[in-house]
Amino acid sequence: MMELLILIARIILMILEGIAADVAVSKVSKESGVTFEKLWSVLSNKYK
Image (cartoon, rainbow, N blue to C red; front, side, top):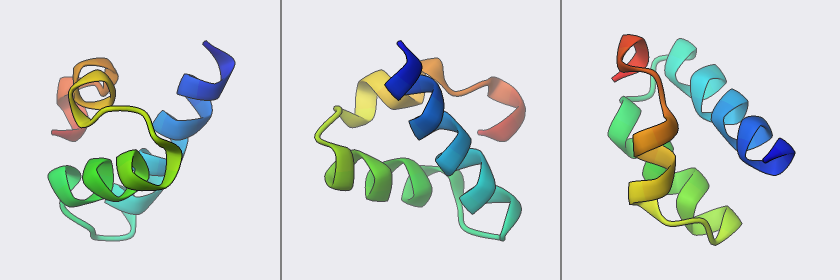
């Protein structure tokens, strides 16, 4: 669970830097091995 929270934090930072949410999730998914669907479902709607 802690690893998932760290990945979500990385995604949020990327979004705040101007990267589109789906691109950020895809990039972190590829780097971490966690599925896009899993990360996308955990990401708050506020950032989608």
